[in-house]
Image 1 (cartoon, rainbow, N blue to C red):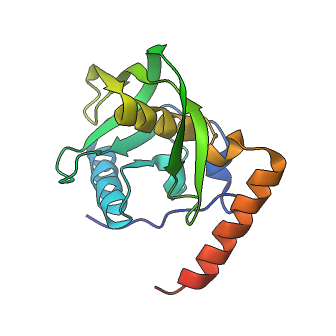
Image 2 (image 1 turned 180 degrees about the horizontal axis):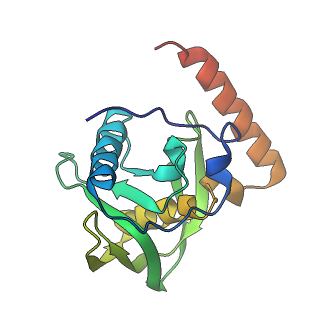
Length: 170
């Protein structure tokens, strides 16, 4: 497995466009998914979408377990059911050093494929629902920061740039 560099907001076009569906389920895809898990864990994240590593494909990996031992991937996901709503605060690996709030459903049901192409459904409440929505947003070119007003968005981007300068080379 290998680490893949995470790309940052406004630094890579893959973050801002709709990702392409995955059509080939093969060893290369399985390796990419494993590399995404390693990258997510290394960055201390609970989710990572392929656009965050500069790949415009509909792939995301998630693990919200405390022990970081329950990873799963969602490929070509779609939300098929949702309910409830509240503003939830979260960070984003592509906008480091910032936390933003976004409106999120408190329950979602997602239909997706795993790395072998097998279809499955997953239901998420609260944190898992939020994480599923956050990663699926990435697959459609939307980040948490995009929910903010222009002023708050600019403030967050300045915080991110300061964070990146401060941590460069670490």
